Image (cartoon, rainbow, N blue to C red):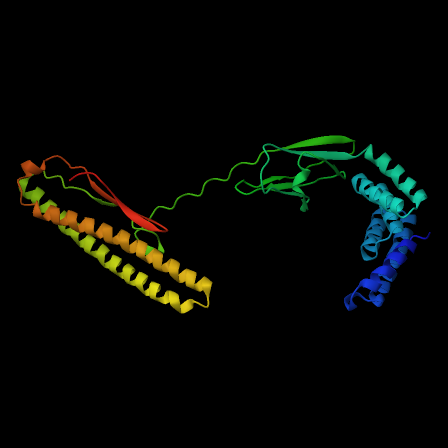
Length: 343
């Protein structure tokens, strides 16, 4: 049976089943191109241009797969010092020949595959413990995750190995040169955890930049009666003014929340937009609570400092007082306030 006879039978069946997108004319054109590429490859092979011949045989096989072309391609790669590629192609050819009853070609392919298997260079990727979602790429070609721990035949030359996994730093190794002698190279892979993302420090920019920073109101050091009272009064006024400002911001955020809440029903036909509006409403309400609570505390502290500025500093204390720390925080569904220290 000729090199293209088996394919001719398969092509006839395929043409009858395909739609108008791949008609008989296209199949005949592919077969003609493949035949010309095959003849060019054989001519190059006879001229001793092995590498160029392999490229022609490969293009012919891709254009119109045929057992005869595959056999020539495998033999070409064997002469081109690509034993792993040739071994794989001879193994495939032996199976195709066995299925089609071509015993002579089957025995020929089996004999060459067996001879090549004795000189194959292989690598074994070792990774412990197993990692879920691993992506393995050898020379930029993706490999199944099950390749870990399995001997992988490779042609001689430099190779690159890239391995990635969720939550792990990418692992890369280049210059994997297996040489020309039969050997098994073990490649140990250690995937390191990615650094945890740094928690951004809260800023005082409001809703666009997160919750307000930690507000610290320190009790003044009253070293003397007059100076201590003045400093205490100034600190009280400043704290109260800051509190009023925070209450204004809280009122604005509450207004935004109410406005977004009223807008929710307007986007019933667009669920994604409606969900976005609802999320904006909840976020604005959270910031209103946080800013409002912080403002109330600041106003209270300011009033306390102002009202006690006329007292006897002996009762207040001449040493530096611990700071009163008001730390608001916000989360997606709420917020709160942490207060530390004494006046």
